[in-house]
Amino acid sequence: MKNYIKDQIKKSFETKQIIYENEGLLNKIEQVSKLCVKLYKVNNKTILAGNGGSAADAQHIAAELVGRYGFDRPALPSLALTTDTSALTAIGNDYGYDKVFSRQLEGMGQEGDLFIGISTSGNSLNIINAFNSAKKKNITTVALVGRDGGEMAKLADFALVVPSDSTPRIQESHILIGHIICDIIEKEIFGDGVN
Image 1 (spheres, helix red, strand yellow):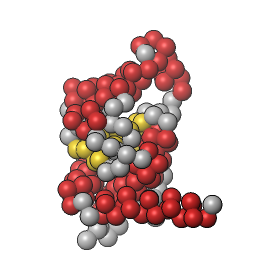
Image 2: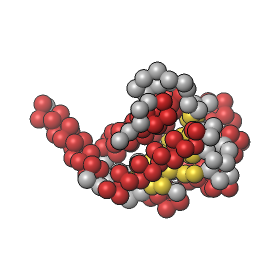
Image 3: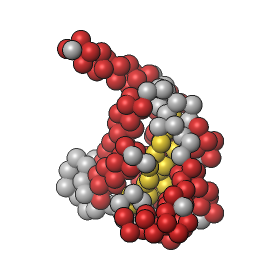
Image 4: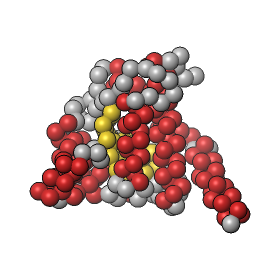
């Protein structure tokens, strides 16, 4: 069993090594981070959504921004569309599950905000619909996805595609990327910046 455990850790390392060596993906992470810093400086917000484990990642990243990531500082506005059970169930009941995020984005998103849709497959219909709603409101879209990026990568302004077909490896890398973005935002706005 210990060898199995070590193999799982090794596979996680290997996925992250591929990301580490992927200049195109690193450039996109940098671009998204800079865009977040810019939007926070003019009082806009980040909005996130995902399904299942990706919903947990959306909530985790939003919590790091509203709460704190590495040090005490003022709260930043960030919203996970996965947390309001009354809205989710009402929209799901009245409009269908594929509208649970797009309807919320229509109501709470504003021009200049940034929407991060998280999906291991890149084909979650409710996130795709949210991207379409975001476009109508001039909200920048980021697809945090895996595999080949799916439909979400084609629709997003920025596609951060984890180069793996393994859901656990993709999810582990998503939270790493989310943490990097939170860290850069925090340091650029409230700390000494990032070199």
